[in-house]
Length: 395
Image 1 (cartoon, rainbow, N blue to C red):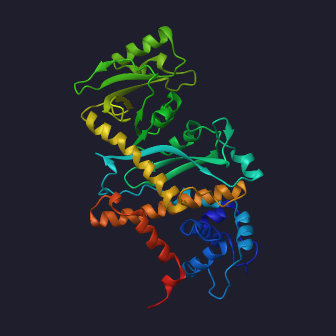
Image 2 (cartoon, rainbow, N blue to C red):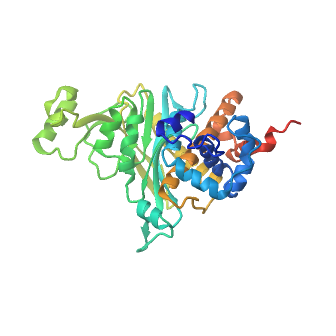
């Protein structure tokens, strides 16, 4: 916390102030532990924990709501984003159940939106959604995040206006991927530019492909999957034919036509897994799922394993539910009436959820069970009790 405050240049203006930046940051996170309480009540509840951290003087009186609000404005939008950047790391250990496909750590990318107070400033910064011909009741911020599937931990995120599409917000996140990770994504995230950027990190990909995208069959493999070429949609005619021929000969890496004018790949070899999901919509029909993956060799992962790994992507929805239902509460909007404070509040939200996933996963690993078997609600109750001053009182 101190390092983030120093990095963002928002050190305390007064040496004797009881709301220096690091205390304000902890109080802002405390708002997510106690969403039913106002600023002053949250401050009363968490000062015991802050005293144990050595950043609160027990002789101080709790700050007023107005004092906390002004301190949050001084803190700005960047400190808690920097804290998240420093602490958000993969949580699953080698023994964490449900977090791996063989040696790959399974991740997902997806987005959600969140209602913010209807103020002039928030409306200008975030905008409204439009359904049924009219604007939404509240402005909405959009968040796109990387999630570790087995633990539901958020690992990286981008926050923007509602009008900014998920594909746009996702692009900076691909640089966060690492070799040994397998990123799953729904069909709304696929574009050649996104695939190219994500694959360049050395991570492996397992993405659903939209029905309208042509996937030429280069070679049918023994397990029923097939090889295809993903390429920039601007490539047509003879150049496209030459790229396909090079892919069939396994010389795509040395094909001049597969390089764009900036010296970067304009085509990638991929493996396709296609399967039906019976009666998915409940009307008696089946749905075709078409996945593309960078895992070319069937010996490394079979089609059944890849299909199962893709459906781990739904663990991201569990992470979203932990944010929206358990931490925020259904139907609620954020507290912050200014855009800087909205950003600050969202990063505090993600930090608390990440901290909870760490606690849950450590407990699950110790008990040799899947983290899904530990109740987020019960764990949150324990965290709330330990964060209050009463937890520090000796028996």
